[in-house]
Amino acid sequence: MDLTDKLLKVTLLHTNDIHSHFEEMPKIVSLMQRLKSELDERYVCTVDVGDHMDRMRSETEGTDGIANIAVMNQTGYEVTVPGNNEGLTFTKESLAEAYGEHAHFPVVCSNLFESDTGLPPVWLHPFSLLRKGELTIGFIGLTARYTEFYSLLGWHITDPFAAAEETVKLLQEKADIIVALSHLGYANDQRLAAEVPGIHVILGAHTHHLLPEPVRIGDAYVCAAGKFGQYVGEVDIWFDLQRRSVRSVTGRCHSVRDEVPDSGMERLIGSYRLQGERSLNRVVAALDEPLAIDWEKESGLGNLLASGVRRWTGSEIGLVNAGQLLGSLCAGAVTRGDLLHICPSPINPCRMLLTGRQIVQALEEALLPEFIDKPLMGFGFRGKRLGTLCLDGIAVRYVADAEPYRKIRQVTVNGVPMIEEQEYAVGTLDMFTFRIGYLSLSEGREVSYYLPEFIRDVLEEQLHNREALLGCKEQRWLPV
Image (cartoon, rainbow, N blue to C red; front, side, top):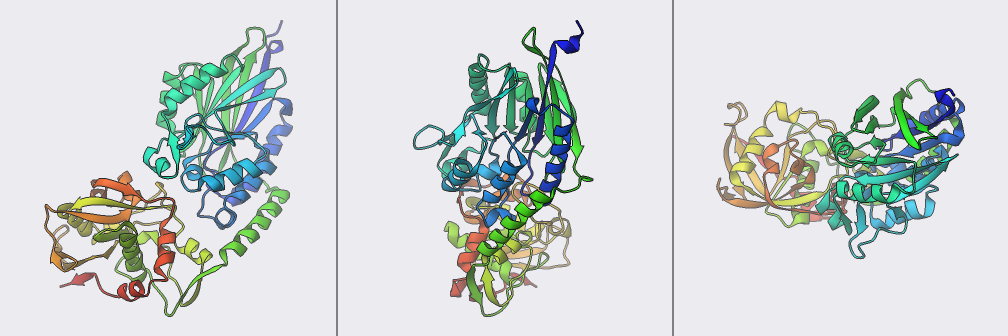
């Protein structure tokens, strides 16, 4: 008998880290429909591996993620895992509505539980079983372990490797094929493949890596489809019906670049875009005069955000990078949409203790073009360049044309000269704790994070603070 008579092919179509790139979603639909037409649809599974949502986009922000769920429903996704952009930027109530009330597909994650009950919410499952012809495919979900952040939102997140091992053992008697939807990153996918037996395929995400074909590690095959909806992954699993085992796995990634967008999906997205824009048109403040931002030097809007972060965290000093703000605010009405447009990053305030020496190092770097113009990506940052540091609670006297790291002549904290070895409470951004941008700001002690509010929520509150609006005009950087 020919081997092909004994083998059955199951195909996984997978996406990851789309991050609300709605412009790619109609092309994803077209590509998936074309691929399915070339396959036996009875043996096709369509899955997403998290971070489909991103609150930088009006469609997502203005609908609390419902637009993404509607797109996923119409695309035909059959299972997904929440990524950190879902788990850490939406409230538990918003996730319950989006996934629990609107999703037509199961949501799986084995290592995420509610803090108060120790159980997953009703809409979240440790695994899902999909029946495809004669085969049962078990899907487990795993998401990145940001312990402190999840704790602040009422979640308990556990070790994903222990969770995977436990869930795989449960599935081995129930499923012919076990697939891990892993929003852990490529290095952790490799570890998962090496350390947890019984997984046949790992579909990866989180680090935005593109694997043109599966990478075999032990008995598992690791796959990933890049970022932003630019690719759809296709994985073929050949199953030996006689031996009841996986014989081989092959795969590839398809670019959506040349696909003709699906018109039905375009109409759906258009309707949610209008809905989102209507929600974001709500006026939240009115300005008597414009507030400008400048990435290269001090500005009123940058100072206002720095003072807001300092007040929000109850700190002596406020430090934020100017690149967080992508535009200025005009005089007159300010809407939610305006704040989203100029401050799209899902970044939270944080508080830490830093020495005077560590603060001065960051201030010296904030005067250097290689830091001001430094391009940044990831870790929640949705801007383009780092930008200089915007300040509150301190004044800096400096000589602009002095040598690098020798420009600052004096720093005062609320009028008192800064002491290099003394620790100061600094309100800043969680982004810096991941060692990007101004690295000395990642060296703080007793770090506290403030969730779920984003820095645009802080800025909105500042727009109602008359004292802060007047104070942001006062100069903090003082050339001598």
